[in-house]
Amino acid sequence: MSYSPASELVANGNLPNLLATYYAKQAIPNLKAQTPFLSFTKQKPLPLRSGNNIQFYTYALLSANTNQQAEGTVGSPISESSTKIVATMGQYADFINCSDLSLDVAIDDPGLLQNLSNELNYRLALSLNTLVQLTADSATSVDSLVNIQLANGSYLTANNIRSAVQSLVGVNARPLTASGDFGGVIHPAVVKDVLNDTSFNGLSDILKRGSDADRKILMSTPSNEDAITFAGCKFKQTTTAPTTTISSNTYYQSYIFADDAIFSVFLGKNPESGEKNYKLFVQMAPENGSVSDPSRVIGGWTSYNVRYTNTLRPGSTMVLRRLQSESSSS
Image (cartoon, rainbow, N blue to C red; front, side, top):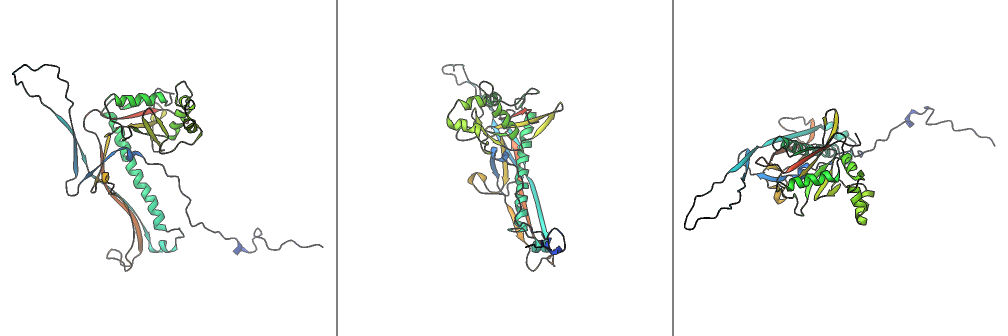
């Protein structure tokens, strides 16, 4: 028995009402970078109503005294000196506001303001992360030992990491953490170079001869929080580790931090006690409007206001290292 094909198809366009679009209400997560630089600083408070500057100081190291004291002789006193550094508080603020109409028609789940606040929160984290990174770079103008530039065409190796760590130990720098580790920031492209180094006593060579857990590191995706641990340094990987151009070649910059390398200062509560002294605000406009917006055409906003500064340690001996290396990825 013969039959006729369907007369109405989506494809033939006879029923334009069939050509409709369903819009997903949940945004696909965008690709945010890790922002670890702040975690490698020593956070200190500037108490409220205590001025806009904070001063840190350190004493000069005294040398050994190998001269015997003459019997019955009082002798002369010795003198000591100190070095200071001053940081000035700054203010960083941003906001996004939305019309009442946009909030009422937005299909965002859980809501337009909530989604925008997530993006603004990332902007704040990225801003603080970048401020610390720039301060770390400024240490190169204070101490010539900070910058370690590898030769053209060279990739970062376990030997370079060990040498940088021992360079810090050589100036009596203290480890960053209570467990005795220094802290590092490294780009994913450089993590690949370190793990791909198959030379004798390279990291890959060391790990493959170790325990099952060591060999698993070579088979797994490196963790952002612990991409590489070697020579007493635990690296966090992030694409915010910057690059620079030297003689037309792209160099990736990796960092190793000791204790007290950089101080982060927030105005107000003491971060060492676990108190947050910066946060994001999400605010709906007053239902009956306000003096500045009687008609309430602004429906709400999200914002942050952070009072912050950072500084290197006082003195001319810096306790961080910056390694510049090319990558096989570039």
